[in-house]
Image 1 (tube, rainbow, N blue to C red):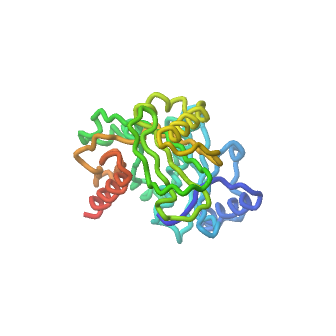
Image 2: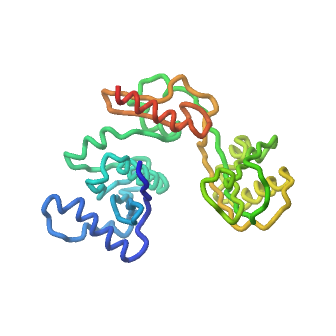
Image 3: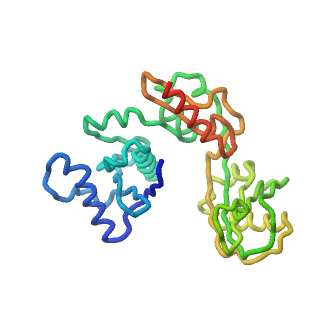
Length: 295
């Protein structure tokens, strides 16, 4: 996918541009008058837009709850110049993720005739437990019935004052902190500070992940203190830290297939857990699915 950001409108001007874009992409092609696309659920809905590198709006979508278990996506649209670039799929993923946060167990969407083909060919990429709930009745392959254990991971990104340390990464033999990476060593950017990524062990994260949001400060402190203790680096002031937890981070036991494709249903599944826990696993799975679709 090209370089797009998906987020909610922030300023009054962005909301105005968002409303205008919705009319431009959803109503103008039907030769309808330029009136705001708003209903009585507008203020209690969650709105998202895709913006390009020039902060131009190129997609839109909205999700709201119909009841405690059902969400509905409305006003979904992508600028015609930016279609077939995975932006529509990214928008759907964002809206579905928001629906899950709201507690929805089912998401519905109405589409025009010409858009149905897009929704029929969506590719699923999600943690295995969620995939099993979503698509078990459609997927008949044996992998869907496997007991795949996905481990959790808690990561802390940390900024400290610049040092002369010339180390790219550490791997620890510890029950809590598993790995630390020096982001400055990758030479992707220049920074006047040291930027570190700290990743927990799977075993510790599996115990802590369900309460990580409530205990984020404590878990962050624990990982940072472990970092200074295990590396022997002189403890210095932490200028910035950010905690992020993945309940379904990775699968350490690769499957026999790298992806799944059903041409009769136009249903594809790719995910890193097909291949293993390494960073490149997601790309390998997606590439495999791409090759299957294009056979």
